[in-house]
Image 1 (cartoon, rainbow, N blue to C red):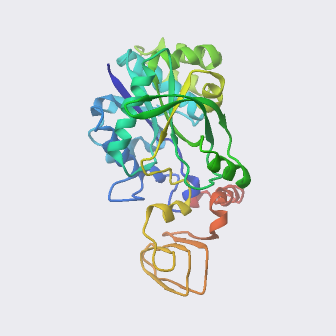
Image 2 (image 1 turned 90 degrees about the horizontal axis):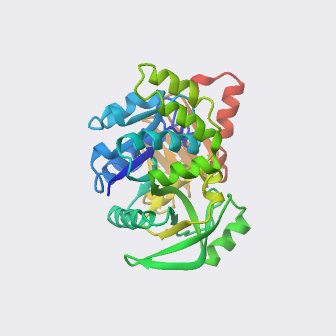
Image 3 (image 1 turned 60 degrees about the vertical axis):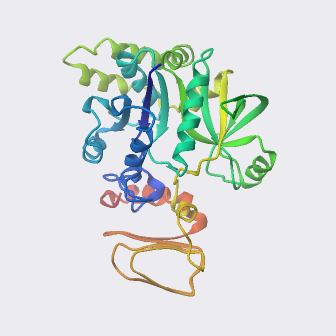
Length: 358
């Protein structure tokens, strides 16, 4: 049995602005440790498979970054999306390329910008997920055991139907639910059978291709057209022109929410998607006043703040619950409760034609 891995690395990490920028998004930054997030993802997966079986889907802007940060990745394993079209087209494009090279493989799909502390436990769970995906065209996802009422994640509700495989509980999925309000998120936390949607999926290549054909026929037809030109000298140009026709749709909405044989493995392995600046409070040690401090900082009577300097001295006095991030050309100051809304600033920059700061 062959295992292949697909790392989705086309995102812009906009909620991590101004450190995450168009030309250097979050997945290429050293957020935790001395490696970038995508380098950590590669190193993690190399504990399971050879580098030749790892593929990265990204856009043209980031191809050179990938070559520079992961020089041992075969160039043929960098899959270029001409435009961003959400996770379903991303996965669809990867599936036909893997189908050509590893037709009978089981495919692990994972975002490029997650932190996972217990890597050994993570690999063991992936191995079990691969085992479950071998049976009856199953689709498998990893659900993160929630530790607080997060409103920025989608959730997965598990049913009471489960079996124990390799000492792990594998539950039938009852349903996927959208990002909840705080009250609903609290009820999910208390229920015990709702899990954060990690965006990590496992399935056989032939299985996901079959579901795309049945449930996303428009996308299936485009993928089939792409397959006919794999040996053509115009391959890249034709794939580009066809990909632009793809529907802008998530794999959750296009496939996962519509089929019955989906299984979720509840996980606890120190996971964080570092979705916004407040994630730094979860992955770093806090000082005696609950602050996350990085760089040249002088703080007095400063509590529960996230402050990062690019070299310039940042001095604070008598502030609470703020995010202050200084880069070479931008300084962000916002309240922590607005961390999920940083993208509104980027929208305003575009409206004011200040794209140089994006």
